[in-house]
Image 1 (cartoon, one colour):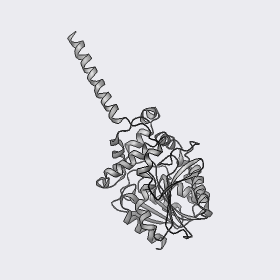
Image 2: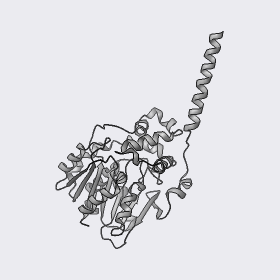
Image 3: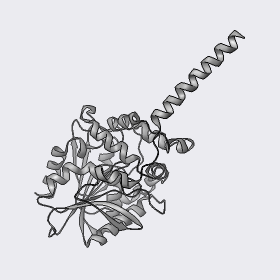
Image 4: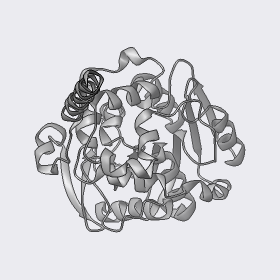
Length: 313
Protein backbone atom coordinates (compact mmCIF):
# COMPACT_ATOMS: atom_id res chain seq x y z
CA UNK A 1 0.00 0.00 0.00
CA UNK A 2 2.86 2.36 0.85
CA UNK A 3 4.53 1.65 -2.51
CA UNK A 4 1.24 2.38 -4.30
CA UNK A 5 0.95 5.74 -2.53
CA UNK A 6 4.51 6.64 -3.51
CA UNK A 7 3.79 5.71 -7.11
CA UNK A 8 0.58 7.76 -7.12
CA UNK A 9 2.40 10.76 -5.64
CA UNK A 10 5.18 10.49 -8.20
CA UNK A 11 2.66 10.23 -11.03
CA UNK A 12 0.80 13.26 -9.74
CA UNK A 13 4.06 15.20 -9.54
CA UNK A 14 4.90 14.28 -13.14
CA UNK A 15 1.43 15.36 -14.28
CA UNK A 16 1.81 18.68 -12.47
CA UNK A 17 5.23 19.26 -14.06
CA UNK A 18 3.84 18.32 -17.47
CA UNK A 19 0.88 20.66 -16.97
CA UNK A 20 3.18 23.53 -16.01
CA UNK A 21 5.32 22.85 -19.08
CA UNK A 22 2.30 22.85 -21.38
CA UNK A 23 0.99 26.05 -19.83
CA UNK A 24 4.36 27.75 -20.26
CA UNK A 25 4.62 26.67 -23.91
CA UNK A 26 0.96 27.24 -24.80
CA UNK A 27 0.95 29.55 -27.82
CA UNK A 28 -2.19 29.57 -29.98
CA UNK A 29 -2.28 31.32 -33.34
CA UNK A 30 -2.49 35.10 -33.31
CA UNK A 31 -4.62 37.03 -35.80
CA UNK A 32 -2.67 39.28 -38.12
CA UNK A 33 -4.51 42.32 -36.77
CA UNK A 34 -2.89 41.74 -33.38
CA UNK A 35 0.60 41.80 -34.92
CA UNK A 36 0.33 44.78 -37.24
CA UNK A 37 1.00 47.52 -34.69
CA UNK A 38 4.48 46.21 -33.89
CA UNK A 39 5.53 44.57 -37.13
CA UNK A 40 3.72 46.48 -39.88
CA UNK A 41 4.41 50.12 -39.07
CA UNK A 42 5.11 52.57 -41.90
CA UNK A 43 6.26 52.11 -44.60
CA UNK A 44 4.45 48.75 -44.53
CA UNK A 45 1.38 48.29 -46.67
CA UNK A 46 -0.89 45.39 -47.52
CA UNK A 47 -1.60 44.67 -51.16
CA UNK A 48 -4.16 42.19 -52.48
CA UNK A 49 -2.30 39.68 -54.67
CA UNK A 50 -3.30 36.10 -55.56
CA UNK A 51 -6.08 36.07 -52.98
CA UNK A 52 -3.79 37.22 -50.13
CA UNK A 53 -3.22 40.49 -48.32
CA UNK A 54 0.52 40.61 -48.95
CA UNK A 55 2.67 42.50 -46.45
CA UNK A 56 4.98 44.68 -48.54
CA UNK A 57 7.37 47.63 -48.27
CA UNK A 58 8.25 49.76 -51.29
CA UNK A 59 10.89 52.44 -50.66
CA UNK A 60 13.26 54.65 -52.63
CA UNK A 61 12.98 56.62 -55.88
CA UNK A 62 10.05 55.59 -58.07
CA UNK A 63 11.93 56.52 -61.25
CA UNK A 64 14.53 53.77 -60.70
CA UNK A 65 14.49 51.81 -63.99
CA UNK A 66 15.70 48.59 -62.31
CA UNK A 67 14.32 48.23 -58.75
CA UNK A 68 15.80 45.77 -56.27
CA UNK A 69 13.42 43.09 -54.96
CA UNK A 70 14.51 41.32 -51.75
CA UNK A 71 13.15 37.84 -50.99
CA UNK A 72 13.49 36.31 -47.51
CA UNK A 73 13.96 32.68 -46.49
CA UNK A 74 12.02 30.03 -44.60
CA UNK A 75 10.35 31.28 -41.39
CA UNK A 76 11.77 34.77 -41.94
CA UNK A 77 10.03 37.96 -43.08
CA UNK A 78 10.73 41.16 -44.98
CA UNK A 79 12.39 42.48 -41.79
CA UNK A 80 15.45 40.32 -42.44
CA UNK A 81 16.39 42.92 -45.09
CA UNK A 82 16.04 46.01 -42.85
CA UNK A 83 19.75 46.83 -43.07
CA UNK A 84 19.89 46.44 -46.83
CA UNK A 85 16.78 48.55 -47.40
CA UNK A 86 18.10 51.34 -45.21
CA UNK A 87 21.44 51.36 -47.04
CA UNK A 88 20.12 51.06 -50.59
CA UNK A 89 16.92 53.11 -50.67
CA UNK A 90 18.65 56.46 -51.19
CA UNK A 91 19.76 55.37 -54.68
CA UNK A 92 17.50 52.43 -55.53
CA UNK A 93 13.85 51.56 -55.36
CA UNK A 94 13.81 48.70 -52.84
CA UNK A 95 10.86 46.33 -52.61
CA UNK A 96 10.45 43.52 -50.12
CA UNK A 97 7.50 41.43 -49.03
CA UNK A 98 6.49 38.49 -46.86
CA UNK A 99 6.26 35.36 -49.00
CA UNK A 100 3.07 33.27 -48.87
CA UNK A 101 3.25 31.00 -45.84
CA UNK A 102 5.37 33.40 -43.81
CA UNK A 103 5.45 36.77 -42.11
CA UNK A 104 2.25 38.77 -41.95
CA UNK A 105 1.17 37.60 -45.40
CA UNK A 106 0.37 34.21 -43.93
CA UNK A 107 -0.69 30.99 -45.62
CA UNK A 108 -1.51 30.66 -49.30
CA UNK A 109 -5.15 29.85 -50.06
CA UNK A 110 -3.91 27.09 -52.39
CA UNK A 111 -1.50 25.56 -49.88
CA UNK A 112 1.04 25.30 -52.72
CA UNK A 113 4.56 26.22 -51.66
CA UNK A 114 6.49 24.86 -54.62
CA UNK A 115 9.05 26.98 -56.45
CA UNK A 116 6.95 27.40 -59.65
CA UNK A 117 4.13 28.90 -57.57
CA UNK A 118 6.54 31.17 -55.70
CA UNK A 119 8.18 32.39 -58.94
CA UNK A 120 4.76 33.13 -60.40
CA UNK A 121 3.95 35.04 -57.21
CA UNK A 122 7.05 37.23 -57.62
CA UNK A 123 5.98 38.09 -61.17
CA UNK A 124 2.47 38.86 -59.94
CA UNK A 125 3.95 41.29 -57.40
CA UNK A 126 5.98 42.98 -60.16
CA UNK A 127 2.88 43.22 -62.33
CA UNK A 128 0.86 44.71 -59.48
CA UNK A 129 3.53 47.37 -58.95
CA UNK A 130 3.93 48.06 -62.67
CA UNK A 131 7.56 46.91 -62.77
CA UNK A 132 8.78 45.45 -66.05
CA UNK A 133 12.17 44.19 -64.84
CA UNK A 134 13.99 44.04 -61.51
CA UNK A 135 17.12 42.90 -59.72
CA UNK A 136 16.24 39.91 -57.53
CA UNK A 137 18.12 39.18 -54.32
CA UNK A 138 17.16 36.20 -52.19
CA UNK A 139 18.38 34.41 -49.08
CA UNK A 140 17.95 30.66 -48.47
CA UNK A 141 14.46 29.74 -49.77
CA UNK A 142 14.28 33.29 -51.14
CA UNK A 143 17.40 32.58 -53.18
CA UNK A 144 15.72 29.54 -54.71
CA UNK A 145 12.66 31.65 -55.48
CA UNK A 146 14.94 34.26 -57.09
CA UNK A 147 16.85 31.89 -59.39
CA UNK A 148 13.65 30.02 -60.29
CA UNK A 149 12.05 33.32 -61.30
CA UNK A 150 15.15 34.21 -63.34
CA UNK A 151 14.95 30.85 -65.13
CA UNK A 152 11.16 30.85 -65.65
CA UNK A 153 10.76 34.54 -66.54
CA UNK A 154 14.19 35.70 -67.79
CA UNK A 155 12.79 38.89 -69.31
CA UNK A 156 11.65 40.04 -65.84
CA UNK A 157 15.01 39.66 -64.06
CA UNK A 158 17.94 41.94 -64.93
CA UNK A 159 20.42 40.77 -62.30
CA UNK A 160 20.50 38.14 -59.58
CA UNK A 161 21.98 38.06 -56.06
CA UNK A 162 21.95 34.71 -54.28
CA UNK A 163 22.65 34.88 -50.54
CA UNK A 164 23.24 31.43 -49.00
CA UNK A 165 20.66 30.18 -51.45
CA UNK A 166 18.78 26.91 -51.44
CA UNK A 167 18.77 24.99 -54.69
CA UNK A 168 20.68 21.71 -54.71
CA UNK A 169 20.21 18.67 -52.48
CA UNK A 170 22.62 18.98 -49.56
CA UNK A 171 23.53 17.58 -46.15
CA UNK A 172 23.32 20.26 -43.45
CA UNK A 173 25.88 20.33 -40.68
CA UNK A 174 23.23 21.56 -38.25
CA UNK A 175 19.46 22.08 -38.55
CA UNK A 176 17.59 24.54 -36.32
CA UNK A 177 15.37 22.69 -33.85
CA UNK A 178 12.29 24.55 -35.09
CA UNK A 179 12.87 23.19 -38.60
CA UNK A 180 13.40 19.65 -37.27
CA UNK A 181 10.14 19.73 -35.33
CA UNK A 182 8.20 21.16 -38.30
CA UNK A 183 9.28 18.21 -40.44
CA UNK A 184 7.70 15.60 -38.13
CA UNK A 185 4.07 15.20 -39.30
CA UNK A 186 2.99 13.46 -36.09
CA UNK A 187 3.92 16.56 -34.09
CA UNK A 188 2.04 18.99 -36.34
CA UNK A 189 -1.19 19.19 -34.27
CA UNK A 190 0.83 19.76 -31.10
CA UNK A 191 3.23 22.28 -32.61
CA UNK A 192 0.32 24.36 -33.89
CA UNK A 193 -0.69 24.96 -30.27
CA UNK A 194 2.63 24.89 -28.40
CA UNK A 195 5.73 26.97 -29.11
CA UNK A 196 8.29 27.52 -26.37
CA UNK A 197 10.08 30.81 -27.01
CA UNK A 198 13.39 29.04 -26.38
CA UNK A 199 12.78 26.90 -29.50
CA UNK A 200 12.78 30.08 -31.60
CA UNK A 201 15.76 31.48 -29.72
CA UNK A 202 17.76 28.29 -30.30
CA UNK A 203 16.79 28.21 -33.99
CA UNK A 204 17.83 31.82 -34.64
CA UNK A 205 21.10 31.37 -32.78
CA UNK A 206 21.76 28.27 -34.85
CA UNK A 207 21.82 30.19 -38.15
CA UNK A 208 24.04 33.01 -36.85
CA UNK A 209 27.81 32.54 -36.83
CA UNK A 210 27.97 34.86 -33.81
CA UNK A 211 25.02 34.09 -31.49
CA UNK A 212 25.85 37.15 -29.37
CA UNK A 213 24.30 39.25 -32.15
CA UNK A 214 20.90 37.64 -31.51
CA UNK A 215 19.02 40.24 -29.48
CA UNK A 216 15.82 39.79 -27.45
CA UNK A 217 13.97 42.01 -29.95
CA UNK A 218 15.14 39.80 -32.81
CA UNK A 219 13.83 36.72 -30.99
CA UNK A 220 10.55 38.57 -30.30
CA UNK A 221 10.17 39.26 -34.02
CA UNK A 222 10.75 35.69 -35.14
CA UNK A 223 8.59 34.31 -32.33
CA UNK A 224 5.60 36.59 -32.74
CA UNK A 225 5.53 36.41 -36.53
CA UNK A 226 5.76 32.60 -36.38
CA UNK A 227 2.55 32.72 -34.33
CA UNK A 228 0.72 34.53 -37.14
CA UNK A 229 -2.43 32.55 -37.85
CA UNK A 230 -1.70 29.63 -40.18
CA UNK A 231 2.08 30.07 -40.40
CA UNK A 232 3.01 26.97 -38.41
CA UNK A 233 0.91 24.68 -40.56
CA UNK A 234 2.27 26.37 -43.71
CA UNK A 235 5.83 25.71 -42.54
CA UNK A 236 5.22 21.96 -42.48
CA UNK A 237 3.57 22.15 -45.90
CA UNK A 238 6.56 24.10 -47.25
CA UNK A 239 9.00 21.42 -46.10
CA UNK A 240 6.97 18.79 -47.93
CA UNK A 241 7.05 20.72 -51.22
CA UNK A 242 10.19 18.97 -52.51
CA UNK A 243 11.75 22.00 -54.15
CA UNK A 244 15.17 20.40 -54.74
CA UNK A 245 13.79 18.65 -57.82
CA UNK A 246 14.05 21.92 -59.76
CA UNK A 247 17.82 22.27 -59.34
CA UNK A 248 18.50 21.25 -62.96
CA UNK A 249 17.14 24.67 -63.97
CA UNK A 250 19.96 26.55 -62.26
CA UNK A 251 22.13 26.15 -65.36
CA UNK A 252 19.46 28.04 -67.33
CA UNK A 253 20.19 31.26 -65.43
CA UNK A 254 21.90 33.71 -67.79
CA UNK A 255 21.60 36.98 -65.86
CA UNK A 256 24.67 38.60 -64.24
CA UNK A 257 24.78 36.90 -60.85
CA UNK A 258 26.48 37.48 -57.50
CA UNK A 259 26.75 34.40 -55.27
CA UNK A 260 27.22 35.69 -51.72
CA UNK A 261 27.82 33.25 -48.86
CA UNK A 262 28.60 33.16 -45.16
CA UNK A 263 31.69 31.02 -44.65
CA UNK A 264 30.26 29.62 -41.39
CA UNK A 265 26.84 28.63 -42.74
CA UNK A 266 25.99 25.33 -41.03
CA UNK A 267 22.58 24.93 -42.63
CA UNK A 268 23.46 25.26 -46.34
CA UNK A 269 27.22 24.62 -46.47
CA UNK A 270 29.57 26.86 -48.39
CA UNK A 271 30.27 23.98 -50.80
CA UNK A 272 26.86 24.80 -52.31
CA UNK A 273 28.15 28.24 -53.27
CA UNK A 274 30.75 26.56 -55.46
CA UNK A 275 28.00 24.66 -57.29
CA UNK A 276 26.09 27.85 -58.05
CA UNK A 277 29.27 29.58 -59.24
CA UNK A 278 30.03 26.61 -61.51
CA UNK A 279 26.53 26.24 -62.98
CA UNK A 280 25.74 29.93 -63.55
CA UNK A 281 28.06 31.07 -66.33
CA UNK A 282 29.95 34.27 -65.58
CA UNK A 283 28.73 34.53 -62.00
CA UNK A 284 30.78 36.17 -59.24
CA UNK A 285 31.40 34.34 -55.97
CA UNK A 286 32.16 36.05 -52.69
CA UNK A 287 32.47 34.14 -49.40
CA UNK A 288 32.36 36.28 -46.25
CA UNK A 289 34.40 35.12 -43.26
CA UNK A 290 32.76 35.00 -39.86
CA UNK A 291 29.14 34.99 -41.10
CA UNK A 292 26.45 32.31 -41.03
CA UNK A 293 23.29 31.44 -42.93
CA UNK A 294 21.64 34.89 -42.83
CA UNK A 295 24.61 37.20 -43.49
CA UNK A 296 22.38 40.04 -44.72
CA UNK A 297 20.86 40.15 -41.23
CA UNK A 298 23.97 39.32 -39.22
CA UNK A 299 26.17 41.95 -40.91
CA UNK A 300 24.17 44.25 -43.21
CA UNK A 301 27.07 46.66 -43.79
CA UNK A 302 29.51 44.08 -45.12
CA UNK A 303 26.96 42.28 -47.29
CA UNK A 304 25.60 45.55 -48.70
CA UNK A 305 29.14 46.61 -49.58
CA UNK A 306 29.56 43.45 -51.66
CA UNK A 307 26.19 44.07 -53.27
CA UNK A 308 27.01 47.69 -54.14
CA UNK A 309 30.25 46.60 -55.76
CA UNK A 310 28.34 44.08 -57.87
CA UNK A 311 25.74 46.68 -58.87
CA UNK A 312 28.41 49.21 -59.78
CA UNK A 313 27.33 51.75 -57.16
